[in-house]
Image 1: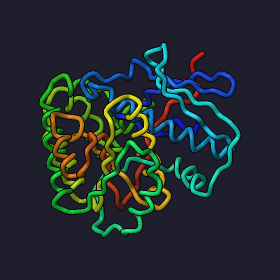
Image 2 (image 1 turned 45 degrees about the vertical axis):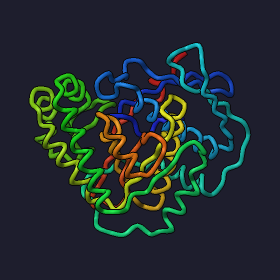
Image 3 (image 1 turned 90 degrees about the horizontal axis):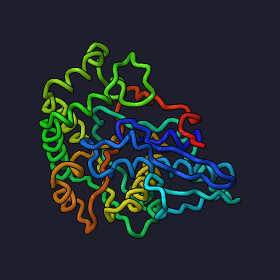
Image 4 (image 1 turned 180 degrees about the vertical axis):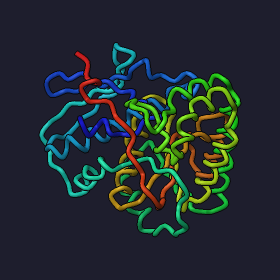
Length: 311
């Protein structure tokens, strides 16, 4: 479970809670981490917890336990899943994924210009075992620029709302912050002095155009964008998160960086344009870029596991 909580989450909110009973782990979300303006439909919350479930599954396998997940419905509205552990065997692939967990990071910056080997996409496809989800691979530069443009528009629209900026400022931390949740400036490649004032800037001034342009520039430089699509319900979102984390860990094991950009599928009706680009019948749920970004990529802080276990 120490490995499970190293999963990515929206703004590093770490919204999960656990209750352990015998060979079962009950998974809940913490209501105080619901984001009414940043994540109005709890889509990102569900996907975040799905990423954690995949880490839990991989870590359990590497301790020779097979994990069976149940997704309810449950009587408790905050309970999202239940994991039962039984004896199992680990494969070489699962060992590689496990070893990638400590170093997985949401990298930021400009990607180097390169071509993605065709066999890499074939290898990623072999990881995709969920029949109700589709994975689309965007390598055409015009389509990548179109997704970057949609992302820029979405971010600008979001930052035009005072409530969004106020909520977002709560999750932005300086490089000196001791907070165990939220995004320290260094995780966004932010200079030290800028990190000291960024929470105030975001809360009281609309700097969305700057953030939007920087995000679009980075996304435009990516050699590959992956879009995961599926039904738009709680259980499907959990499975989207599990698949996304599985792919990102696999890419991490091959020394690729991944960078998450979900604005275009979250804000306004832009997901329909992403759906057309991805050529999928399902609703796009998760978007991330793949490639190599030079420089150091520091891990974000984490709450201690003991703080996430409830009686």
